[in-house]
Image (tube, rainbow, N blue to C red; front, side, top):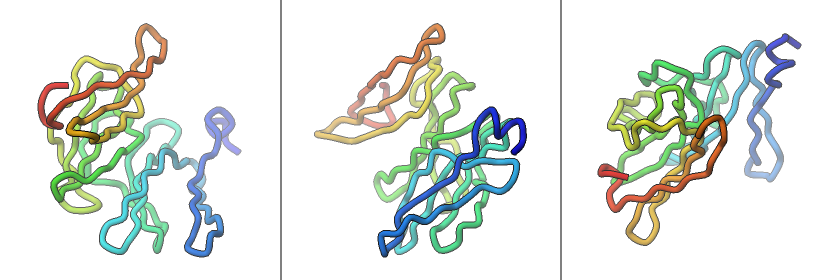
Length: 166
């Protein structure tokens, strides 16, 4: 075990297969997998996740039929994790954690599952982590962990339109 693995641990991804048996995907030496987000597209299950090399998190995916990870084609200049993927108006969107940018950004998929482009900043001037979004009773709710003076605060924002002010 490397020093980085001793510090951060060695994470992996598990799921139940169709027979109800746990399946495990171990990361190769020198990286770990975290924050899996399963997305069923047509008949295939894609799993988006953070691939962390103990220095920088990058976003990747694999399918359950072929667990070989592929890095996403997405322009994020810092550590990225927690790839929250959702479907809206027949398009896939992602809100990855990029707290070093001090904003919550929305990305749109232009070629599923690999190619993503920046769509807009949802909330600016916020040091936030693990953002999830939900549409309920005519409103969008954005749940996130906000860091305020080193303290984690759970926050909820809402909007009538995902592309407008929060």
